[in-house]
Image (cartoon, rainbow, N blue to C red; front, side, top):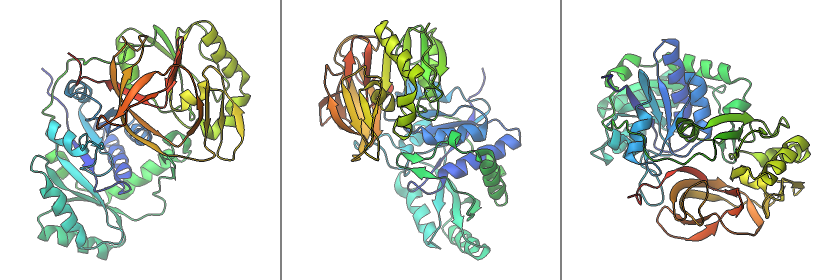
Length: 438
């Protein structure tokens, strides 16, 4: 029997601590050393996995302790080959509004050590107290040490390390301040990895800087095997069809790898097309999947791409299953108003109008129940997903797709639209809700 791979979790006290940059730099260093390290990202994030995938040279998958069952988590982590690195989400103890689903919950479930990435900008010896507090907060979470970012000088480094030594906190590495180490942001997080022409240079430079002051041998010594070693395939989102064509480019980049993996495992053939390149969906496909992304940033281009829009309309007229999520849902509607107040006509397959002229944040985990039977399952089938967008709805008329509550089981509402085999909502499906599966 092959033993499970070994690895660690890189977490942080809060967002914007530098954990994505450190995770990517460490993955690139391991790759240089010919050490296999499969990347994972905690939570529903789409942006960070792009950087981790590029750094590691292999696909980064999501591990979501709120939306996924232990069987699902165990199956995904068992796919790592040689070693793995898991990047946490937000702060170590932050999760859903229900209080669960944090990186700490995952660390406890998997029995893995946590390395805390701490930004030291504006801090000195206080970082040791911060690290000590995180170390002692939960007895079932093993915070094995720290890596510091934004270290301003050798004197700053000395102050930080001595403070940690006095508090018995292990320092595994230092990432010095460097103006070239910047991950640009927009309203949904970082700019996508695929949008950066300098991506490889950035990752190589980050690896070079981290390697100057990193205890790689010490990190390898604490790497552990996950205690949750369940390789049984968990129930999953059913394939939309046997031949599924998926929109994929910088406007439609938010697609969970595990969903496509599941569909392939069930015999579906997956192909891709680029709406931004004015490609239509594969005419031979029996299902079209439009994931989320940033279509509002490319609305004028999409509205002008006749081949794409005509192909999408013809697919709908021919009885092809079409599922749109978030950005993909907006494209299925009548039109999108961009941030400048300009209206752009879309496919017109659903009675939906959306706008970014007045942005409104919609954020959080969702528990969904199918309102009618279809390719996603029988009426009443329950899913878990996530919503994160700034679109306002001007019109949304027709039969709804889901009955939805938040992570607390509160704020019940009807969301999404369905019209024959065409359907969509602002929610990204993550997994079957096994808490209600019998």
